[in-house]
Amino acid sequence: MMTLMAVVAITALPLALIGCEEEHYYRRDNHYYPNGNSQQRQSNDDDFWVAMAQTMAGKWRGTMRAYEIDKSGKAIDSIDFSTDIEFIQSNSRAINGTGTQYDFKKGNSSDNADYVRAFSWEIDRQSGDVYLTYKEQKGDYKMRIPYKELNLNDRVFTGYLYAADGGEIDDFYFKRYSANVKQMKIVFEE
Image (tube, rainbow, N blue to C red):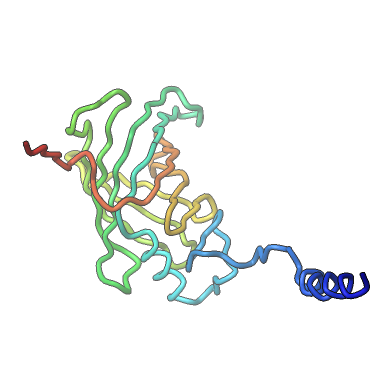
């Protein structure tokens, strides 16, 4: 009986010495920007902004709700979109680039987007805000994603887009993907 208790005590000792707490400071992603905060950020570190741009680069898909805003700042109308958006860096160390946004109105099951908009983008080194300039027939349409309102990691990109003219606010939730399903053609062979 004494031998059995000694074996149990020796077996249980390592379990008593090992904690079961999770290390919350560890993130699986290399870069994580929750609501504009990061343990890795240093105010004058260009590498931080480059890492953010590299994380943002790529193809994203998700939902976007666009609100029309009146002169008093109240939402007077909204429309929901399924959106595919791609950010392309100018080069691997750039904090700017170009992109294309495909917006599909709710209920659109076709392969044709209701709106296709080309844009350029850049990260402001002082504030971290992301500026998008859409090229449109009537001229450039500028929007801003405030750094303090974005969430960005290797899998998810969420935040708000504010129009420079104050007439629109977009709420978006995107997930990273590797192929544009709306553009893929599936062929069945017999």
